[in-house]
Amino acid sequence: MEQEKQKAALNLSLVMGDNALILGHRLSEWCGHGPILEQDIALSNIALDLIGQARLWLSHAGKLQGGKSEDDLAYHRDVFDFHNFQMVETPNGHWGKTLLRQFLYDAWHHAMLQKLVLAQDEDIAGIARKSLKEVNYHLRWSSEWVIRLGDGTEESAAKMQDAYADVWPYVGELLQKDFWLKELDQWIPGFTADEILAQWWKTVREVFSQANLPAEPMDWLYRKGHLGHHTEHLGFILAEMQFLPRAYPDATW
Amino acid sequence: METTALEHRFNQKIEREEKIEPKDWMPEDYRKNNIRQISQHAHSEIVGMLPEANWITRAPSLRRKVALLAKVQDEAGHGLYLYSAAETLGTDREEMIDDLHSGKAKYSSIFNYPTTTWADIGAIGWLVDGAAITNQVALCRTSYGPYARAMVKICKEESFHQRQGYEIMCAMAFGTPEQKAMAQDALNRWWWPSLMMFGPTDGDSVHSQKSMDWKIKRYSNDELRQEFVDKTVAQAEYLGLTIPDPDLTYNDETGHYSFGEIDWKEFYQVISGNGPCNKERIEARRKAHEDGAWVREAANAFAQKRANQQVA
Ligand SMILES: [Fe+2]
Ligand SMILES: [Fe+2]
Image (cartoon, rainbow over all chains, first blue to last red; front, top):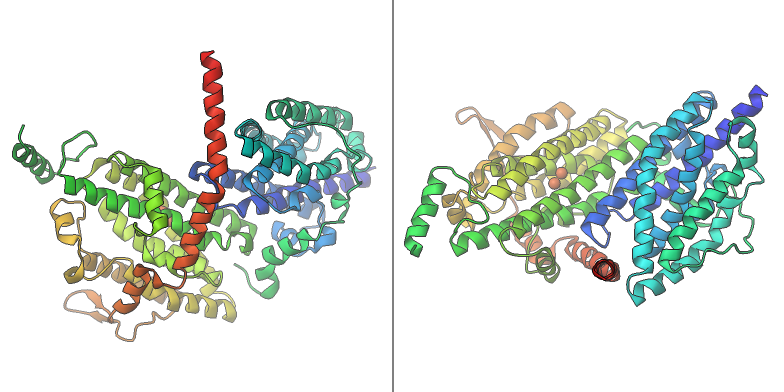
């Protein structure tokens, strides 16, 4: 039982940490290239929050793996060991796509954290509490932008439709409850996958109705990013991210 | 009041070290001079984000990544304060940005050099932010109020950047032989361009004298350059790195370092658009602006719609 719990905690920390790290990486690619200076700053802020959260989750995962560091995990794993959703590794595309992807992730992230703060495991609850404060803001910001762009000009509405066509096929993975969400409800009191998913749909429907986007389930492909099966994009992210520690294995920076 | 009386009053204020504020009368040249300098400074912050942002996705540890991202974000913030300060003089951000993109407005020549290794991130923090602080501490006492106040805020962050950069240099200079070589290479490439950041020598500086009279500038280019060299040499020695100047010697009589001749030909090439990365930098800024046009339009249209709804 204790072992099972540990395994679930590790798995959870990797899923949360890798999502935060890879999405943070994608957002950081915008730094210096945003459409408006104020929004460049806002998006960098979210990237900073996410990478900060990734450090907490990965440090915790490292501890559970017998004393590895956040950097061991970030810089010395290959694609098949990463547990993030495929959605967060997809390329940024235009600002509208980045923001739509962000919103869909934020809605999930927020619903998840609201439950994780209740975990009996104090490490997990603590990371969740700290993250939730930040993600409250992320969700508000990305919701506003999705609405603004969906209901802005004809051009922006068309771009959001394109973004939707790109991103929506990936959200299925956030909503799969057969694997890891089910494990969690066994040891986090009050954690039910159904509630998290209901919360996600509620948030998405509210925002999409104002953004003129359809919030309809589709026949989603079963994606397995969380199991280490990724798109071709992740390898390039890692090649870039991990270059220095791998090229100079003896160095500390 | 006649212009001469106004001008007299203005000069007295400058004399008494009182700040000039946006609503105060000021000579047209003073206004122009400030707009030029403040907007150029703002552009430098924004263009300066690019060479450093180049390494965010490749930072060698998560701690360094967060610090670098936060640093580049600070620079964006500096750009914002400065654009706002310039706007108090009756220009607007859109206009200033257009001037940057058309090449009419300048920015610091240093940002036209490439960041090719991670050590460049250390060298920029140490040398480029270090040179910027030397300039900016002096500007905290500049005569135009909004500019002086923006500088006070900015200086605090810049000294943090400088320490952070130096810390990266320390980690490398005291690291493996490859890391030390990388650090030395970065110093070799960034040293002279950092000295060029202070601008032409006093004799050749077009804008200097008037700026000094109006106390926009408080110290000459050469004075500031000397101050920077004096404080940086010991820092390089501590790292065990060699400053790439065979003529660098300490002068016992003056208490200053004397240093070799700057390659002014290179300096003028870089400021006239022919530096190693001028095209890429402006192109990147222009692309961000153009690609973002639909976003800005949508945000305006949306705000307008909501405002109409409220009226109705
Ligand atoms: Fe700055
Ligand atoms: Fe700085």
